[in-house]
Image (cartoon, rainbow, N blue to C red; front, top):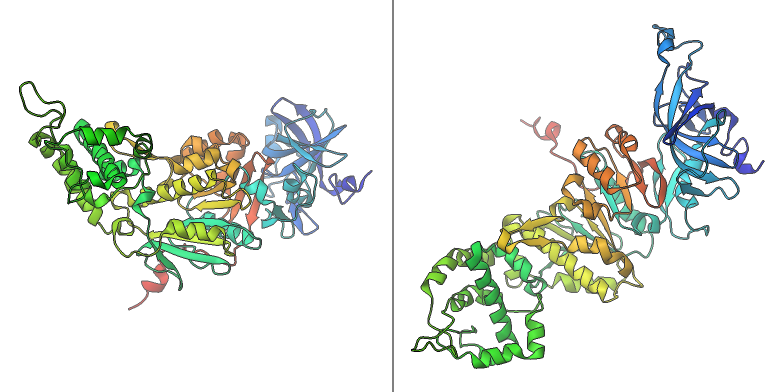
Length: 574
């Protein structure tokens, strides 16, 4: 017998709990030997329940070992009254445990694969799974080479010594999501992930929605947009140039209504791009005037191959401040007056079209002057945040924290700005900028930014940058780590792209159902444990984890500022 199967290995005589009494395609039933015991047992500093619900087990089969989890413990109906009402135990309690089969252990290499290679036989022996073995499961799947870079997230629940060590490929390689209700430990997990990555030459870009991660210091570059309540010394105030916005962003900002405003807005944007390409077409006010003007020169410029390509590029630059006046210049008749009508030039101003566009023009003026978007349309707002991202990639810094706390929610400013940053990162990834420098983008409070749509049916704008990163960023070296307390607000298409889920306590049925639908590695039996997780405890599931593991996340040394109001401290003051 090998050392793995010795008294200190996989099949430990002291952890024997029973024998298989029934086998189905979904689970097995086990006759428990220790059902009448008052409590579990301690071994090597860890407690074992020896037949408790939620406990991981290993079944000794002929050629394989099968990993499972106890999902039910019960007595046969005829033995239900045999329990002692005073002590809660019985001398000869014939309890049965139902075990859900999760994976297979190959006894020659001790590797682990998902699924059941061979079902157990009646009478096969069942043991509590050793805590030390459970802690090494993530390293027993995939490559057999010993990894150089590992991240120590925590320890197996119920043990103080069994550290859970993971590789960044298994956590971030297929994207990652940290999920959990308020108070479950989600922010601590994000902070722990970041500080573990900072021990290596990592490149992490953190979109900090609430400013709670401002305490990171070593290897960190802090930048902020807008006017946050508090930022660390040395944080750089940045702007986001309007060139980072595309046409859909402007549609989401200005919300044109009906079938008349949206076409005029698009036409005005196109005209301003045209005068940026060929300034000779502009009036002395920098506008493209159409009223009673010949069409020949303008149409000829639009039909040029290079000009047409730039006009069709949704991110082509133009002077946004001219947009309200240019919209009025678009409100003209298509054909000039005459008998017959002169189709070689535009007609005069159409006052009806102009009156329809006035509400939109008022909104555009309000947006351009708003405090919420001052970092985009204001003057002297500091260096470009996109330039900061570019310089960060080639710098020695390992974490770039972009604070969005100072951006209000008015005019959907925060969502649109975050979406523009995501689009810039994806564009850089497509240019192969991250192939040799893999980048992790951590999006805190992701439910505020993903799956959002604005506008009416005629001018609907979807903010889908991070959705596109989830679908194609991995092949370019750009990976996502989403953190949210509301999985139900993340589209199923995005959540299903997350190869690893770190799930804290979830009490909402819709949240758990979304996790079940998005992740094939967790079913209703496994998700039933999620509402009962303790603070800081999390289940790790995903394509690189053959069985859902429950771990206690280690408390980070850099604590996030996620504490609520201190009522005892402040209300007690006179």
